[in-house]
Amino acid sequence: MDSIYIYGGNFLRGETKIQGSKNAALPIMAASLLIKGTCVIKNCPRIADVYLMQNLLQELGCSVTWYRNTVTIDATNVIDNAMSGESVRRMRSSVMLLGAMLGRIGEVFMAYPGGCVIGKRPIDLHLTALKKMGVEVIEQEHFFTAKVRKLKAMDYTLPFPSVGATENILLAAVLAEGTTTVRNAAKEPEIEALCGFLKAAGADIEGEGTSTLSIKGVGELREAKYTVPSDRIVAGTYLIAALSSGGSIFLEKAPAEHLGALIKVAGQMGGNITVNEDGVGIDVIRRLKAIPCLRTEVYDGFPTDLQSPMMAAMAVAQGESVLEETIFENRFRIVDELRKMGADIRIEKNKAYVTGKERLVGASVEAEELRGGAALVIAGLGASGKTIIKNRHFIERGYEDICRDFRNLGADINIG
Ligand code: UD1
Image 1 (cartoon, rainbow, N blue to C red):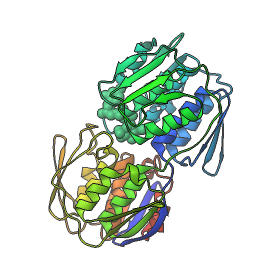
Image 2: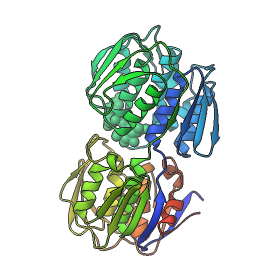
Image 3: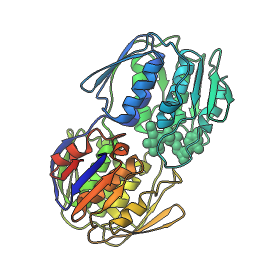
Image 4: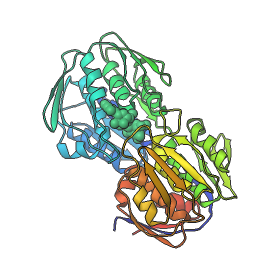
C-alpha cells in the first residue's frame, strides 16, 4: 500500500499528455475567493494539493464542484475567517489564502503553513509586504491573525523574488486603493498565469513575466473562466526520465516556452529535443554526458523543482556532475535513497558531486517529499531489477497519475 513498484531498464517510447500546472492552479483557486460569484477553472490537475485547496475553500464557505478537469468555484458566500490548523499545515500553498482573504473580507486567522520538508520556508517576506499595505499582523506561536480595514497601494521592492510573496501581493493589490508597484517580483510562468486569471476577472495588471509589476486596484472583480497552462515541472520530470532511461518520447502539451533552461541542459547531456506546436519530444540514444556545473536559479534559470529529478539522471551520466542548490537549503534529502540504489553522490554544503554509474540497481526506497519522490521514480525506471518506492502519497501531491503516464511511455510501473 502507498507504494510504487517498478521493473526498470525499459527504454521509454511513446506519447503522453502533460497535466495542468499545480503551481498555477493553486493560487488561481485561492484567487477565486476574491470574486463574489462563480469561476470556472479548466485543465485543473486532479492532485492531492488541489484537493487540499478545495477543502480549505469549502471550509471558508465556497462551493466547489468538478467535471473531469474543470473545477467550478462559487465564492458568493464566504462565511468564515479561520482556517483549520491541519489543512493549512499540510500544504505551504495555503498561504495564498492570506492575500485572498484580506482582499475579500479584510481578516484571516490561520496556522503557519506547512508543506514539503525541503527547507525552513518562512513567510516573513509575505507578512512584511502585506504590512506595507496597511495589514496588521498579530503573531502567536503556531497561529497568526492578519487584518486590515482598507488595503492601500504601495511601491515595494521585494528583498528576494519569492514566488509566493509575489502572488500574495498580487492577490491583495488587485482590490486595494491606488496603484501598487512591486519591484524584484518573481517572473515564474505561474505568476503570469495568476495574472491571466485575475485580468480575465477584470483586474488591471501590467508587467507580468517581468520583474516589475504594476497593479491598479479596481472596485470589484467579476466572474471569470480560465484554462490552467500545462505543468512545466511535470513535463520536465518526464524529459529527464527519458534522459536517464534512454528512448524516444513525445510530451503532448509540454510548454517548451517555459522549459528553456532544461532543454539547453538536456542538449548538453546528449538528448535531442524537438519542439513543435503540439508539444516537446526527446530522443536519447547514447549514454548521457555529465554536466560540470548546474545551479538552480529563479526563472528563467534551472528550476529547483527539477533539481532532484536531474540528480537521478546525473547518477547514470558519464563523468562527474556538480549540482548546486541555491533556492532551498534542504533539498538533498533524496541522496541517501539514491545511494541505496548504488548512486555515487557526495554533498558539500549546497553542492552535490555526482559521479555517474553505468546503471543503478533496483532497491526499496522511501519518498520524503514530492520532487524527491519523482526523482526516485526516474531512478527506478532506469535501474536494473525491481524498485519499490514507499510513501507514494508525496508524489501524488503533484502528479495526477505518474504510473499511468510512464506506462504510456512503455515503462513497467504500478501502484501497490
Ligand atoms: C514556489 C513553488 C515551489 C518552487 C518555489 C521556487 C508553489 C506552490 N510552489 O514555492 O514549487 O520550488 O516557488 O520556485 O508555487 N522565503 C523566505 N521567506 C518568505 C518566502 C520565501 O525566506 O517569506 C525563501 C524560501 O524559504 C525559499 C526561497 O525563499 O528558500 C524561495 O521561496 P519562494 O519563491 O517563496 O517559493 P514558494 O512560493 O514557497
